[in-house]
Every structure is written in C-alpha cells, then in structure tokens.
Length: 422
Image (cartoon, rainbow, N blue to C red; front, side, top):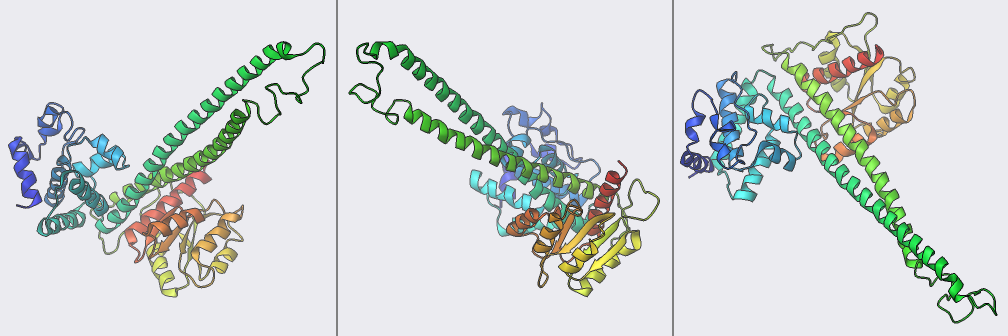
C-alpha cells in the first residue's frame, strides 16, 4: 500500500474522505468539522480556493492530505518550520503553488515524526501533480516557482532571525538582572563593612591599616572580589549580547524587506494572467512619471548575456546602461543619478561581482542603489549569504526567466519612483 493509500484509508476511518469530494468543500477545516474532534489536526486550514483548475486542485488536495497526516495546526507547523502562517494557508488552499522545497520538507517531517514515507511511484505522482499545477496555474509557472522558492527561503530566514532575536532579548534581560543582583549584594557587603568598622578599630593603635592579623588581609582577598569579577564578566556578556542582538535585528529587517519585495514581484507576475508566455509583456509601473525613465545598469563580461538582458528589458521603457566588467560598472556609476537597480553578474574575471558590489556599497553616492545578482550559483546558501553580505538585495538564476526578470526590475523601478516622488 502506498503512503497516499495509507493516508486515504486513515482519513476514511475518521469519515474525512467524504468531505474531500468533487465539490471541493472541506468541512473538516471548519471549527465544527471532524478535525475539531481533537482540536489539533488541520486547525486553521482554509477551504480550497473555489476558482482552482483541475490540476491545481488535485495538487492542493494531495498536499492537504500530507499535511493532515502531521496532526498539527497550521499555526503550529508554520512556527515549527519558520513559515508565515498566511503563506502556509495559501499553499494549502491552492491559491499559491508551494515550491517543491516546501513539499520535500513536509515529506521529511512525515517520515521523521510518523514514519510515513512515499514510495517511488507516489513521489513521482506528486511531482507530476506539482509540475502540472505550475504549468496550468494562472501565473507563469517557472517564474512563480523561482520567486516562491526565494520567498520561502526569505520567509524562513526572517522567522529564524525573529526567534533568535527573542532568545537574545531574554538572555540580555537575564544578564542585566544578574548584574543588578550582584550590585545589590555588593552594596550590602559595603554597608556591612561600614557598620562593622567601629568595632574592629583599636582606640589605642588607630585605624586598621591592613597589615595586622585581622580578617582584612589585602585588597584582593575580600569577599566581594569574586563578585566584582563576576560583575565585570557579565558586563562584557551584556556588550556581546547587545551587539549580536543588533546584528540579528538588522538581519531580520533585511529578510523581511526581501519578503515584501518578493511578494510584490509575485503579485506583478500574477497580474499577467492569460498572456502569451513566449513573449511576455513588461509589467508597467502603476504611477508612471514624465521625464527620463530610471536607468538600469547591466554588468556581465559575456556579450551574449548582455544581449539577453537587453532583449528582455529594452523594449519596455527602461534606459539600459551596459558594462562588460566590474571596473566598467564603477566608471558608469561615477554619475550615479537616477539608477533604479543594478543587474550584476557574479562570475567575472578580475573583479568579480562580490568585489564590484563591495566597491559600490562603499561609495556614499551609490551605496543605496539596489543590486540584483544574476548568477548560476545564486541558489547555493553559502553564495547567497556572501551575496547579501556584499550588499545584494535579490538574486535571479541563470538561465534568466523573462517573467521573473521583468517583475524584479519593474518592482525596483517602482520603488525608485516612489522614493523619488517623496
């Protein structure tokens, strides 16, 4: 019996399959439905999108069966997987096609937590459903898949940073409280020492100079010496925690910004429903302005790659400036006025994309121009982190998908216009 069949049999035992009928009504998702019996399974699951086509509905139903097998609520699984609950709800409702990375993670969780594994045939069938949903969805499948994968990664990164921020906040509060407790203990010791001073003073010999045989044998042997050392160590820990907290907050803010930009890119692609995928129209800015259009800098050492970028973006109102190397790009940016975005190849001889981006970010007049790395290695986490550290705000993989490229450039042009109009 396949894992799908086993799950269907399990659902039938609970009377749930009847509610996954052809009309798509998922009454078990409501608070009074079957899932409400234990208060956990499927909690927060929204009904399937009523406008789904057959392929998208079949994939969404398979995804929901897998999710229900976990026996957890939408919010709990979203928190556990560092996902936005709204994003997870859209995946499970079929209104947005989940990236395959999300599906694989769901399968891993089923295997690890419930020992439920898909056989090869069931897994291949699920992949076929995923590809069919992407191909027939109202959005342009390949571009949406790319952006959904990036959004999934950015969303997870933001939530992980948020969780780390909360941990550091608690640690910082606890450390500061420990310092306050030590200060109070030191204060009490000082008060006790002051109260005992008259009793240990010999009127005939004058004040104790610290050279006798009494309890005070020197400045480094008092009972408060260890407390002072502990306080100093805690103060250093506060400094370290505060610095890490600031870095994590900045990291979380950047990840949240990437999520917002990717959401706008997805929305822009989804507006192009029913268009010809062989020659996609350029998404247009919602608030066009008179005068010269914002400039887009294209940087690649291979002329054929520059030609592709120019062919995709050129006919749609962008002023394009091309550069064949990092030094050429820096020379083009000597007059940085009105550049909306830079498309920068990573793998170039001499000065590569990382080094070029670092130079751009060091210049006061160019540091705020967003950089999109165009690269065949952008999906690698190590390269992604290095790119973000160098100042990139986005990635687009090679071979370039025209829909994704147009959406990314259009959103950054629109953001540039919004900033310019303020």
